[in-house]
Amino acid sequence: MECWYAICCKPRQELIAQENLLRQGFHVYLPRIQIRKRRRGKWVDTIEPLFPRYLFIRVDPNRHSTAPVRSTRGAIGLVRFGGQPAVAPDRVIEALLQREDRATGLRQDDRTLFCAGEPVRLMEGPLSGMEGVFAQEDGEARVIVLMELLGKANKVRVSRDWVAPAAH
Image (cartoon, rainbow, N blue to C red; front, side):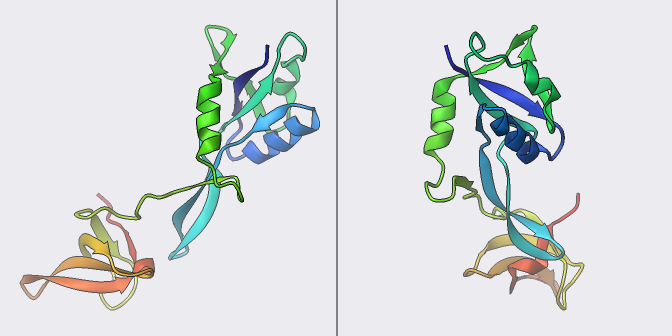
């Protein structure tokens, strides 16, 4: 009977493992997500594995050997518990598939960049280096940060690209 099995991959080699497993005739599923990350001072959309270092294959181990997985480029091997391969329930994989965008196959990261009350630091602009508290988003490219200036709290509107999490 076919089941979904979790495969552990080498760091940042999920796509290589996926490609090589597909070439070997395995049914492979690599859930991915589109998220926003700060790179070179700008917030950019990136596509990453939903579960870094893991992907799934669907196979009937009685009809198709899983031994080649260990020697597949990019893969380490099947995830095992007590020596037995870890089976991912069909309903879990189906739930992941249902939440994907049909056109791109990606999950969208619907989280906001910052939560109200979260400490942030301005990385650019005239107030660069100063810290404040994130208040809210103000349109598509701007945010409002509460900052202590001249002895009182002030709302400051700045580019979203200028804001980063404050280091603790």
